[in-house]
Length: 105
Image (cartoon, rainbow, N blue to C red; front, side, top):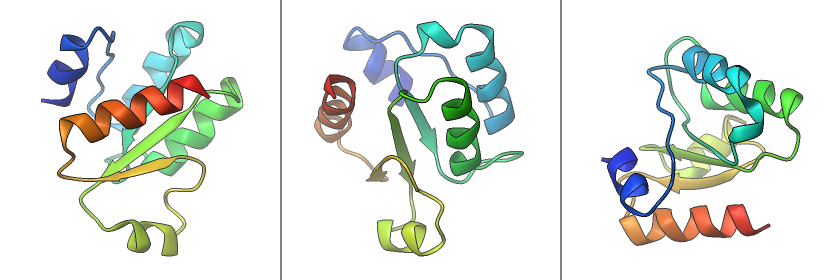
């Protein structure tokens, strides 16, 4: 649903099944990725680990994390460092607004 929403609003979206796959997609063409939108909890590599790896390759890439867990739980565990946070379910206008804001900074 998220991919469809973003594509309908003109964004080009790369999707991955897990953090490791996302990192491999990023490594294939890091210059074409303008933002990382990642779930926090994923198999093989969590969102924070993915963010750290991506930022080693491209330090300025903005990051938005999403999760069904409340933000305070995620911050207590140190999982969401270095990015904006959206709690699922996310309203389309909230996601699009956060995305526009992250891309404009």
